[in-house]
Image: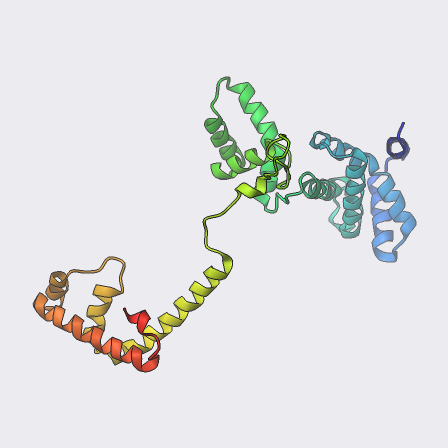
Length: 289
């Protein structure tokens, strides 16, 4: 028998032999701990509720983590509950402590189940701890249900998006794999998984440079636009600065002029804008082409 197994059994035996507390005893011990910092009161309060910690921890034994570790984390949650418990609310300590015990154990599981941190939001936590149970339940109730339909029903039950269910199901489908693991076992092969994760997206420094240049060019254009008349700015915005540029004819109808006149206004506005930009930055000729 390993030392950890022996320690766990001793812990369980001590917890099961601890006497139950009445409501009045709970109230008294909680007040003594909160008011006077009486550690003996805390020890008695926590020891009498260790069977609750063990019961909650046993619900998560299928996640593959050591039971003794989960009991210890649950004990931390129990102590946190003792420090926050308000006896004057007349709620049984076990009812209040159960939430803190479960939350502490769940956080421990999420930190240690995978090297990739998951379950950082309430939605992800709900999926992580309920996905397998709901999958088994729905699959048993509806034989032959497709994977997509199953995920849709799980999403409806928990109140999340189907895409969130798809992502969590993919994460739970297999163990962690190192990016440095070789792809083949053949002798002389040095290819690793990370070698095939090349991204076509721009490099971070290129993205930053483009963003800075874009902001700078926008400021130059705004300054140069000040030399245009209201009519010239309107034509230029409709023709050059919108994703869906308007036609000369449609602009002319809106402004009550001919499309040829709109063309003349546009050409004059472009010349004035070009001269203004060159005056501000004479070395930026390439930007104006």
